[in-house]
Image 1 (cartoon, rainbow, N blue to C red):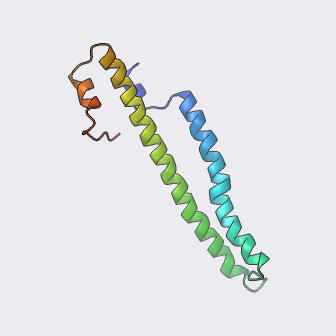
Image 2: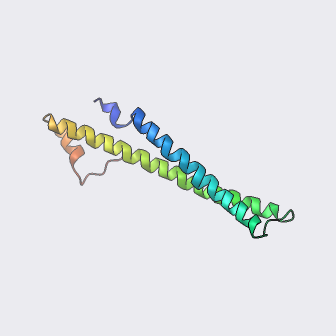
Length: 113
């Protein structure tokens, strides 16, 4: 495997990212905003007079959950890249390895990509 493959995702990993996070976008982000919007109407709080209050409330919750969703994607990408690096390092170690490989395998050393 090449050096660049440790910092990029495989097609299967991109597919996994899309499958997981497209569902989370709909269920968690849109669902969170929609829950505020729908619940405010269901309990009688949202009327034609108060719609201008509840719309920003629902959008605020949607924005908060969107930021959370985005942070989850960045964590997924970081962990996947680190996993790819460790896999390459383990493959190199099995083939004899070198000093750089031993550095990657050091559990005390933090890997930042």
